[in-house]
Structures are given as C-alpha cells and as structure tokens.
Amino acid sequence: MNIAASPGRPGSPASAPDDAIIDASAVDYTVQVAGKPMRILRGVSLRVEAAQVAAIIGPSGSGKTSLLMLLAGLERASAGRIVVGGTDITGLDEDAMAVFRRNTLGIVFQSFHLIPSLSALDNVGLALEIARPDLDLAAVRKEAAATLEAVGLGGRLDHRPGALSGGEQQRVGLARALVTKPRLLLADEPTGNLDQKTGAAVADLMFDLARRNGTAMVLITHDPALAARADRVFTMMQGELAETPREKK
Ligand SMILES: Nc1ncnc2c1ncn2[C@@H]1O[C@H](COP(=O)(O)OP(=O)(O)OP(=O)(O)O)[C@@H](O)[C@H]1O
Ligand SMILES: [Mg+2]
Image (tube, rainbow, N blue to C red; front, side, top):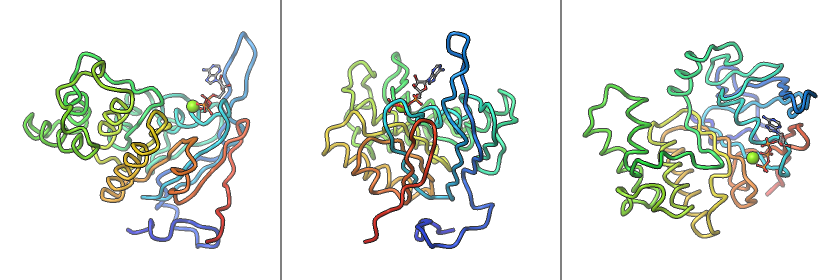
C-alpha cells in the first residue's frame, strides 16, 4: 500500500479503518500524586495511517511522553481504547503486551536506555535477536552492523555507550529501534540531543529507513524542522491533543 503519497492532509479522503496503524480514542491517563488524582491526558484521540509520519509538538509537561508510553503499552490508559496495528492493547496482559511490542514496535526513548556493558553492535544485535529468534548469530551481527552504518556509526561498532557521545548514543538507540523493521516507530525527541546538522542527517536516515521499510512513525519533537517533515502535526496542550492545520504551499 502506498498511503504515504497522500498523507491525510486536510481534504484527503479517509482511508479504510484497517489501514490505521494507530487508532486511539478518548484516552485518559490519570495518576495518583500524593494521594490525589492528577489527570495527565484528557480525552486524547489519535489516528495514524500505515506508513504515515505524525509529529507531536507542545510545551514541556503537556503529556507527550505520557501518550507515547501508553501507545507503547508501557503504561496503562485509565480510560479509552488504544488499537495499534489492529491489536486492542488496552486489554492485553503483560505477556501479550511484550509479544505485541516485539512484533510491532520500535521505540526510541527520550533518555536512551542502552545497556552499558554491551557494545553498540551488541545493543542493536540484542534487539534483533529477541525479535527474530530464527536468525543465526552471524546474520544478526551483519544486520546490526549494517543498521549502525546507516546511522553513521560504522566506525563505532565496538564502543560501549559510555565511550560514545550523547548524539552517538541517540543514533545507537535509533538503530536498535529500526533494526527489526517495525511497522511503527515511536520516538521521543529522536534528534533532541543533536546539533542542527547532525540532527538533520539523523532525520534523513530515519525517514529513509522508515520509507524503505514502510514504517509509520510518531515523532515527539521540539524541533520545528523535524515537525515540518511529518505528514501530519499534532499539538499537545495540557493533556489535550489537536491536529495542527498545515500551511498551504
Ligand atoms: N507517573 C507519573 N506520576 C506523576 N506525574 C507524572 C507521571 N508521569 C508524568 N507525570 C506528569 O505529567 C505531566 C506530563 O509529563 P510528560 O512527561 O508526558 O510531558 P512531556 O510533554 O513529555 O514534557 P517534555 O517536553 O518536558 O518531555 C508532567 O507534569 C509530569 O510531571
Ligand atoms: Mg517528554
């Protein structure tokens, strides 16, 4: 399917329901803080089509990361329904949720969550090994190395995270998320720690790999240049999400 070519701009027809990679409706997320409920997400609805790129912008503390955690099944919605890749994840138990994540998702966190004792190659290889138990070790290492090369880290395969710069660690995180060719990449400020030039280069790689693999992306970003490249832009404000109309070209 090639929906990326007609990316849901205002006026374009709605796609068939089964084309959605994300279909979240009326999602609430309330946490208890010092015994009092705090409503972080307020009736959030979000629909993203297969292979589409959605950017989420909005002020610090507005709820962007919280939404990503719910979409990834790492936190539970308090109300509403979240369907990702055709699976209603609001009802999954922990085991089923782990299988869902492994088969469907790549996640790039705001802080990188790399394994400190493993080299860049093994951090990326481990993710592939878990997702694809059918691959032998040589195939895993070859694919992991190729993905690290694609993000410009071919010369850093044996470096542990502690011996990499922040931007390099971020690119390892990106390679780890993309090495499995997921249907959906959830990325929290994937270029947030990079200078403008490196950020733009990493964004190029990310869009290129995603388009090649038909991966849909949800990108949380404070970077207007990155948001401008998305098919659709949403703004989070105090726990409410709204689509931001794009300026006509
Ligand atoms: N588990 C939690 N317990 C209490 N408060 C929380 C919890 N998770 C998030 N919050 C609060 O919810 C609000 C939204 O947090 P979130 O991390 O989603 O913001 P954000 O939009 O990603 O911000 P930033 O741009 O700074 O990363 C914040 O005020 C945060 O303190
Ligand atoms: Mg955040």
